[in-house]
Length: 419
Image 1 (cartoon, rainbow, N blue to C red):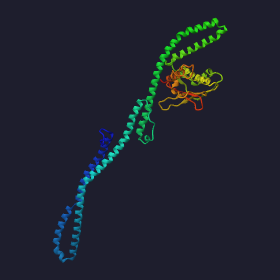
Image 2 (image 1 turned 135 degrees about the horizontal axis):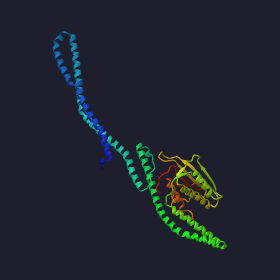
Image 3 (image 1 turned 180 degrees about the vertical axis):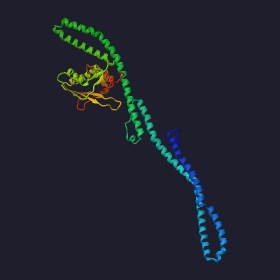
Image 4 (image 1 turned 90 degrees about the horizontal axis):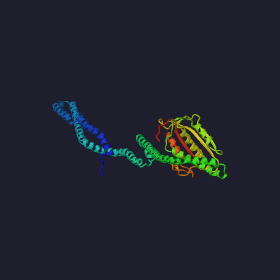
């Protein structure tokens, strides 16, 4: 195994750090050696002291005759000879030390350089691991995103990373969520498009025989309507043809964008009217709305159909429970989560019925899914279609103390959304 892999981050960091440390050290070593050598020769070199000793010896020889008759001069010359000898010995010692320092300095510098290279190698490996681990994680995350698998949640190790890496991880997670949402919306849009095409064909085939059937039922009612035995079959015929007509209308609306221009809609007033007209006697209702609720820019008929389906869904859930109940509709103003996200109107339709079946999840909004024996599975699919056309979202869940909740969030400002 090679010490440093070629073209690796660790090798590049090692080269950069080694150059940053050794180049100044080499320059400093050369300059320091030169300065040390010159200063040593000038300050404590043996050459000047030897010259001084030679000149002093000549002085001593010239003064010996005078010192023979002058005791004071003899003592002064002796002291000077001793001090000069001591200074000359010290100078030679310092010169020896200086020469050895100059000789050993390159070896010491080499040892210091090797030790420094080892420290730099260890530091570069540590830094490379610190920088390469997030890169490896992000490379693995790209595979998870490609396979539509969830990313790992933030751990304690991530909190110890530098802020830039934390920001990068957060941005990657946000991008993965947006990509996942885009994929999900694309799949839902394609599924809805396929279902819409099929539903419109079915609606067309249903409408062809419906018109003569309704005309025939009307003529039979006029001819034999007074016959007691014909009243029940005629009522069944009227009810079933009406149900087939409503089903054909739902099939025809599936996959088709809302018609007409947008207009300001008072959601509180709209829901109050639906609670008064569509909820039968025996079921209590309540409407809770913020006083400063803004007008919603949307398609009025599509919003009426959306909230009517949700309210009728709650009524049917209470009817399946076999008793009366209570339906609560909450309308709230929701501020945007970010500056680029507009304010929204959030509507929650709550009932105290039996609730949703377990493990239903998002399947409840699919066109081919229904929990009712005589249902078509199109009502909630049309709800999601209309909400998506307004750039909003819809969710369903069971309430903690029983019953179901359908949550709709619609942006206040108009959003151009392709459905």
